[in-house]
Every structure is written in C-alpha cells, then in structure tokens.
Amino acid sequence: MLNNAYRSIARSALATSRRSVSTTTTPTATATATVYKNAINADIHNNVRAKLLADPATYPLIFILGVAMAGCSGFGVWFLRTSTDVRVDPNKRLRLIRNWSRE
Image (cartoon, rainbow, N blue to C red; front, side, top):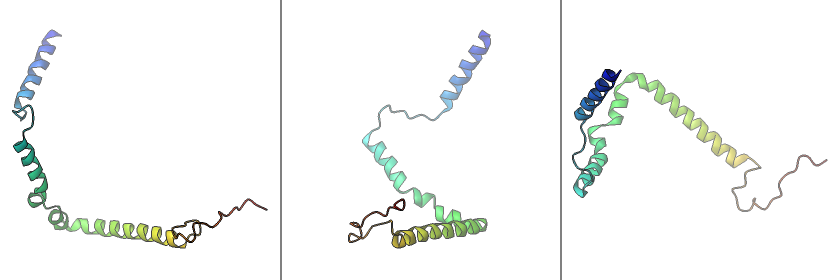
C-alpha cells in the first residue's frame, strides 16, 4: 500500500517536471505584450475561413445554418413590425393594453 503511494508520487513528479511551465512567477510587460501580439495575429497563422471552406463536406452545413439564421431573423423582424402587442413606435406606446377577459 505504501509502495503504491510512493509510485504515485514519483509518477506525478515526473509528469510535473515534463510540463512546460513558465519560468517567471509574475508576468512582465514584455511577456504580456507578446501574448497580446500573438493573440491579435492569430488569424494570420490560423486562417479559419480557409480551413472551413477547404472541406466541401461543410458546404451543406453552412447553407443550412445560413438559411436557419435568415429565417429566424426574418420572422423576428416580421413579428416586431406586424404584432399589435409590440409597441416600438413612440406614437403607439400610449395605447391601452387589450383585455380579452372583459365580457
């Protein structure tokens, strides 16, 4: 049982020593600037558009998602413009709310 504990500690020590850990404990201004520069220029090294459009199998998925987004957006705009309950126009905001339960 103690042997397993020693073996576990040795394995975790080896795994910890193999990790690439930063040598500085606090980030310096140049290290932070380098991280931000790499993040801003990430699209140069990792062109998502070229990778996404390189595979023809993604074309139907892109088309279906585009049609779904257009349909949802169109329905939302149509409902906002035609519904009597939505009062975006300042002239219509002062109208009374309909009461369907009144007999």
